[in-house]
Length: 357
Image (cartoon, rainbow, N blue to C red; front, side, top):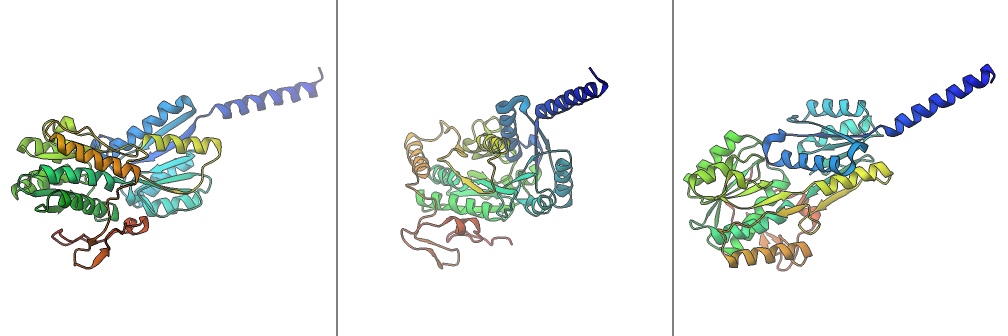
């Protein structure tokens, strides 16, 4: 064999090894979390979804995450580092990351971004969320039926449409079940602050609430409810171990199937920018096991509501519904469209207090 042929053969073999090595490289998928994985709520449940990717694809995919990342420059830095390290798909799992995702995505057009609960898309940005408000319709009904004091306490996080929508859905369902119901709402202006959440739960109980709802991420309120002998609902995940007697049910965020589907789309080249907003029907929003403390008839009516929402024969926002100021929002039989729900910035009639700006 001539020297030239030997060199050519060596180059071919080397190229083959490089190509084989590149083909064997796992696809990198990154997650950025607003809270700690140990929050046992919102972030924990997203990480359960990340683990579903690992289970589905094995060594074909390499997932990573960075937890407790504030919005703004920190989020930009983390996502930029992910992109520079060869990450092909980044899940930004908080509404607060919206501006950062927009900035970083423009710098890395070949990287795919998935933004949870956001509304700003781009050629390489998809948005996704769950219809949590459907879950709050179910638990609102249970709360309205179960309260003895007719006062339901609600711990709210940040006044964005998602949270306001949840409060309104829970209130309307509770009021329909029990016209005497009143909501007391405390805004803690944080997604994850166990101290503030515990203080809010204690204050609401002192003010007569015998059932606590929350749109915050820690099990602090559930722990207080268990200690004080009142009822509560798990948020984003099942929190029964923190309130074995207190938890009536839970709204569970089931992200795994969506994450697996989107990773596969990137792998097979079918990923496109789109918005996904799924609820009880597709299974992205799930209702936890009903406590034995809930009477059989209430379980039956709650299940009927859940099934109606899943099938689309029932809607959480069906008129007549007025805004807090008494003005008409939805006429009798009228159903709120998604665009209206996505931008909800008002309380419905009957809720007391001022909505923070």
